[in-house]
Length: 138
Ligand code: HEC
Image 1 (cartoon, rainbow, N blue to C red):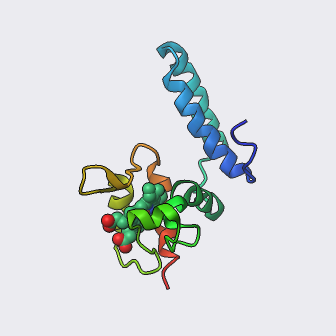
Image 2 (image 1 turned 90 degrees about the horizontal axis):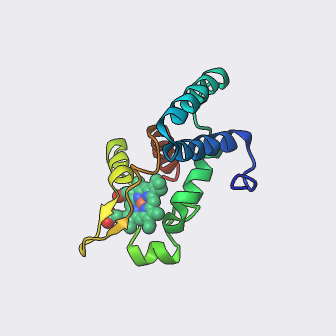
């Protein structure tokens, strides 16, 4: 199963929620409506807790560390190749970080140096990641 490797229940919940949303999109409409109503009721009962530090670290390691490194120093092979910034030296504002995560960064050849995450991460996750990357600063 996809969530076996994850330790915390909250992370598991988060990923189940996303997988569920992905599956829903492929179902016929009436079925989708019933299931999303059930899911909404479930969310209301369980509460939609803020993203924990642990979940954010998990997200960073999964989505960002290949280039930025788990320590934010960007000393990974891909990070070096693409010229990823050392997040400890970063001085960008919250708004700029948000834009960077949402839109990514275009390379001169039209490709991306940093991919855009707007389709992949939801606003809560992005908000959590903004404070997470700022913690690397000295
Ligand atoms: C495929 C490699 C790659 C991945 C994955 C990646 N980045 Fe980046 N990131 C870069 C590169 C390259 C830059 C520098 C872009 C530039 O300014 O030319 C950058 C720049 C940034 C900056 C701006 C730093 C500054 O001071 O200008 C932030 C913040 C950032 N990344 C956060 C993230 C976060 C958060 C994630 C995960 C959601 C992520 N990155 C995933 C390659 C990556």
